[in-house]
Amino acid sequence: AFKWMCALFSQRSQLQRALGLYLDARVKAKGCEAGSAEAFTADAEAMEKLEVVASLSSPLVGISSSNSDSTADMSSVLKRFHTAKDKHIFRILSTIASPTHSPSARKRAFDELPKRTKGMGAVSVAWTKALARRCSMGAFVNFESIEHCIILAQESFEANDCKVSSLFLTCVKTMIASFPALAATKESFKNLVEFLEVVRTDVTPEAKKELEEYGIVTLISDILAKSASSMPGKGNGDDEETISIYETLRSQLLRLCKNDGTPEQARNSVHALSSLVNPVSQHLSLPSRVKKEKKEFEPLLKALVAPSRLAVPDDSMASKQKSKIVSVLSAIAAVAECAPYAFNSTGEGKTPLCWGERAIDFSLNAVLLGKNTSSNLSNEEYSSDSGSESETESPAKGRRSSTARGNKAAVASSKGNDKVNISVHCRMICASIEVLICHIRATIVRAKADGAKSELEAPSTEHVAKVFKTLIDILEQNGQPPSSRNERYCKTVQDQAELRRCAATNLLRLCDANLQLENTHLTPKMWHILSATFLDKDIHARESIMEE
Image (cartoon, rainbow, N blue to C red; front, top):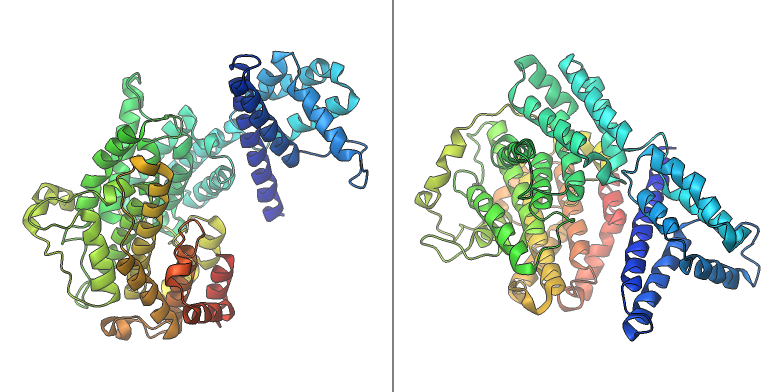
């Protein structure tokens, strides 16, 4: 039932996006000069988008799929709908194309649309009514219910009931997986930021343990990471309260990245920061977007690659200190994915390597291959960041993610308990693989998307080949670490299964058709080794690999 509900919400979200794209395309077509070639082209594009809407909506009433005239009838219905002269039809639909529409807008759509489409025929009226029903938010899930859940989560936490608070936050997390904008309203955004600040600063020692047990901070960071893309972003015209909320959120997210956040919290924080820096609602030019990206993430990346943070843990360190390297690498991987321009920008100081190259050098040479890093890092270069180390925050452990794309609720819930038995060195190796893969993928994809104006350069063929070979060696050795230094730390069955899962899933990510790396670097022998993992003896590894 839960999977059915999630699938239903996902379909509604897709339909809302498709309807919004059609309405924008129709407005663009109407704005062109009548009879011009531009107008015909824009109108044809709008009709194509309307056909996508029809494919996601319900079929015509009274017409079976075996009827040979069904295609023609649907085409005529769409044509009558597209050429309707009543502008209010499309204005009403535009209000329910957003998941944050009010119950009154939903009621108005149900009342007005049948009256205004009456002249298009009974079939067209029925199809339009069905479109409105499928597109509108119901009484169960809407922005008001999400706001109430967030408030109830806060009140439950204040009443020292972290279990109930986590249940309300889990409901919010489930809903915004399909409708991120529901948690991006001004009231919800404000309450989430206030909640995050309270659980990070103003808690008793007893409450800290419950926060860790129920993963409150992880849930809030996950919600912010998903919903931040729908937030309007900070602007010059914002009032003092809004600016203060953004600054508070930014400071808390940075502390999760640099100080005491778990791997999932650090990754969520970077994704939320990226969405706040370059929100979807602001259509910036490439130079402006790159400038904002570098301004936000270069200082963060510099702090993350500092020698005090980016170092292989030794046996004398406490387990809590050892695990920090996993969070640091997870944050670096997220920066590589979200901010490739900042990750590949020129570095400072005495060494020629940029901050991103230092992270790559550490991940590949120090962690995976067991070599001494050649970045020659100097503590003097990081003196400006020394103050951040003295900050003390209450650790709020959450459920750790299990994949490089690990923000999926199902994966986190089904595999979170297995992570307890995996060693720190194994998780460090997996996080290092994430850094390498995110860098390769994000750099190539962003360079292609931005075209000739992009200043990004694709990773060298030698580097990509070395990454392919390293991952294949892990699979060929049945989950043994590529470096002999780490073999004594990764001898358990769980560690080796996790390494096989991580290596295989990330190899498949490198075989993405958009990257065009498979034909060059994946030999037939490598394909045979990779295909053997589809029958891996560990069920969790096998499921993750097959899902990828």
